[in-house]
Length: 145
Image (cartoon, rainbow, N blue to C red):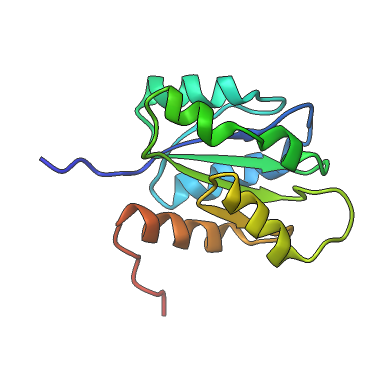
């Protein structure tokens, strides 16, 4: 029996209190057919992992706007593995580093930390939705005329 893989845990990591972006993502992901658990702001790695276990999530989507995402995300893949979530998709996006940096370098660092995808500031939700569907093996919607 193949269960539809569409359960997401989303939130804003660390001491970040920027709530608007995560509400937009919640709306967009829900409208795209995902079952979303939005943890809100100031979420610890442990809270993401506990929610992912509780909801049997397929992906964790980490948002950060205050620039400290790189510090806040260190060790998250290891903690997921230790909790039995070695197959969970890990996405991160937003202003995830301090200052202006070449995003290819930033993306490489996050992938080296075990994240499946990293998205730069200003990425439209539709792009993240596209990659979630690809990575989860879900059908893409037909383009609207």
